[in-house]
Length: 314
Image 1 (cartoon, rainbow, N blue to C red):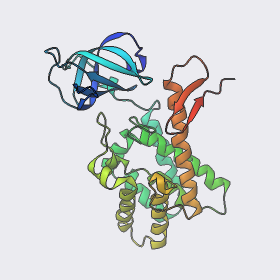
Image 2: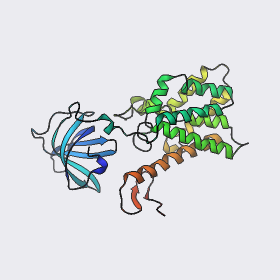
Image 3: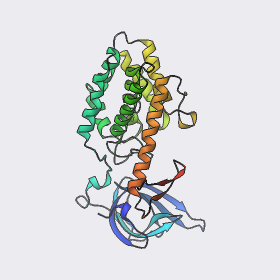
């Protein structure tokens, strides 16, 4: 398997990839062509079909395809110039090569994650988390395998669990560091639930695309609705506790321009935002450091972070 991260300009490759996107387009010169986005577990690469000859077979988005292509460079990014293409046949490829996964053992991650429920002393918060992460197999199975994002951070199988566990651990440190000022149980409950509805916002692999619910509502709105539904199942769940938990949910992106309907107005909501933001951005540094095979310490420019990234080589 020639993974996308291993492609080099100037080589000719024959390999199987997942077709994530297929678009009919027209060049500035008026020439029709097909633009593709191909995918494997190491990343994505743009590809072009300039000539629709009999060497190009029928295929659709979501198909596994076998391509013969020349690797070129356009605006600093690698691109495939496809000469031959057909749909891949069963047995010619291993589906695991196209599904990026967490480097950690999922069972161990989940066991560590649910252990935080035992740190919750408030009965109604603890019951809420048990209903979601202990009693609901449908949610558990999706949560264990889902990505945390389409592309920005933790965008691999198990990424949502990995990210949520990390945010929960950071929040646990915050709660201890600011003891006496932070409601530990509120903060940890919010941390464990903050991104749960990404299981409905983003479709599972290998598609990993925004669903209609994700496009029209988003995980923040769906998360607030989930809290309402789960709190209603628990007898005498305090309305103020539900309100504060919802506020943590709807403000955890921290800023209006990042999709938060409200800015954090409580210490718990602010600390959740800080933990979420820290882990997401740290993962961007880690992912870029691992994927970019540069000779020196400087890795390159990250458009999301808005800066050049350097490895701390001492």
